[in-house]
Length: 282
Ligand SMILES: NC(=O)c1ccc[n+]([C@@H]2O[C@H](COP(=O)([O-])OP(=O)(O)OC[C@H]3O[C@@H](n4cnc5c(N)ncnc54)[C@H](OP(=O)(O)O)[C@@H]3O)[C@@H](O)[C@H]2O)c1
Picture 1 (tube, rainbow, N blue to C red):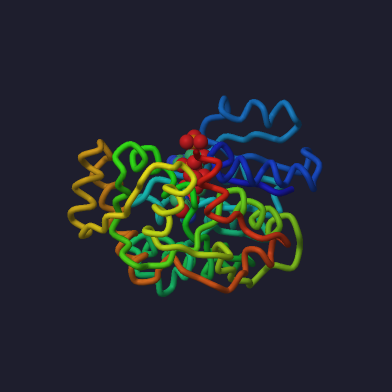
Picture 2 (picture 1 turned 135 degrees about the vertical axis):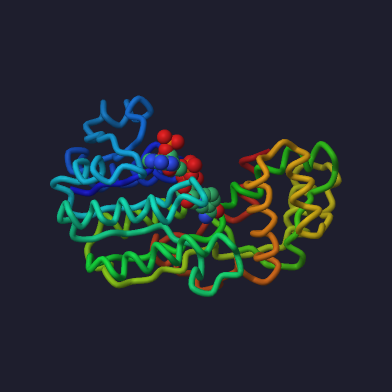
């Protein structure tokens, strides 16, 4: 049996869909905190089990009979090391034989503050004794495209990534890779640095938005503090705004760049170009 956590999240749903193309639903387990959100998967024969990352005992029960586990990193930044420890301890208690974990691109040397909890989790996996693989995911293209409507309205795309090259890919691209690694054998011990085949600066992204929309959009680079303040001004919670601004500073130092093409080699198809993602958003 293959289980996937965060199965009602955006990446989790796409990964489960990809797995349903290659595996019978009876072999798949969706571990979720809110089973009502997973009704469609349950109707299709996926076993839906309830467990919160904060509840090790519930996870131990949910993982009974599971051989392979895809641990989708929690979205609760700041709580993640403890939450992931619960899942890894539960996996050990339940006799799980392989874990794939969605980490961060170049986590061991990343300039993004987000790397800290991922490095802690990678260490826990190494110490667990359970065979594992690391899916070190780069940025989702969808992250920056969430700013597209505001950029089109105001004619300015703001950020703090400077000239940093961003090799993003879509969630669907990362999901395809995750489905392969958890769905096939032979990935134990592997570390995959996953990113888009092509990269762009935020100025180039603004230019692409202009080109496809016929509206002038220019990129305005801000300091990390000014960018965080602007995001808070748009109503983002302080912690999220500061995390995004810190991540942009990390991007300015090359933290979101990779040209290994590992993602497309793993999925057997090119990653989705940013121009295509812009088209989808428009
Ligand atoms: N590479 C990137 O650019 C990037 C960007 C954002 C996030 N991420 C990371 O990648 C992960 C997957 O991305 P995503 O877009 O799928 O995020 P998402 O849509 O926010 O999904 C997060 C999933 O985690 C579940 N979750 C959160 N707290 C939980 C808890 N205490 N117990 C059990 N489940 C919990 C959520 O459950 P519900 O469905 O019940 O809400 C959801 O299914 C994120 O969680 C984050 O760690 C990466």
